[in-house]
Image (cartoon, rainbow, N blue to C red; front, side, top):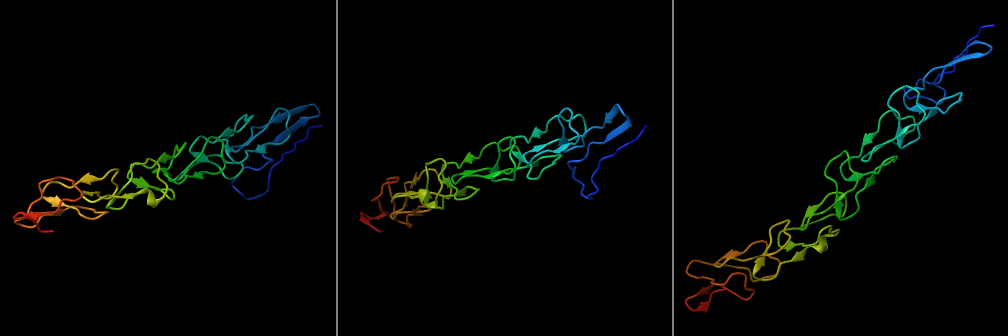
Amino acid sequence: MASSCVCFSSSPTSKPTTTLQLLVTQDDDYFAALDCGAGTYSLAGAALCTKCEAGKYKATASVNTACDNCEVGKYSEDSAATVCTDCVAGTYSLDGTSLCTKCEVGKYKATAGINTACDNCEAGKYSEATVCTDCVACKFSAAVGASVAFACTDCGPGKYAPAGSLACSKCDAGTVSSSVGSALCAKCDPGSFSASAGHPYVHCVRRGRQAR
């Protein structure tokens, strides 16, 4: 005697459920199985389709024997995913992960997308979170991947550093910087001069005597 059995979920959710495979009985010894829906899979002989676990997805309905890992830089937090989501800037992921990981201190990732790892902050910058910040003017950092602000170091007398500097620069002749931590060098006053560049003890000189 011919009969039919249709298994489905009555839940209004738009996500596939564990009972998406349809089994139709035409007679006592004939069964026809429909494809598993997107976001699900089944093994041979299974009566039901299974949701893809977090970190995996299946984009289409078909003969889905397994779900695919989310690619690097993407994730799926929920089960039965049909797509994976890009990791946002400041995070990364390896393949098959359910969550993105924040960049460690001293590292950053500027864009969302295929983020397999975070990048070291360049010299002259540091990171205590997920973005790199310039060392403030008057300080420098030669280190790559600096993780704290105090990795930025004051320039000594006779030198200066704009924000984000990886090294201090010598003051030009005709300018001086007599203190530690200068963002720029001061020009000598009219009638005075400084012949040496970058010397820590040089002052502007007027008529054979120190004017500053």
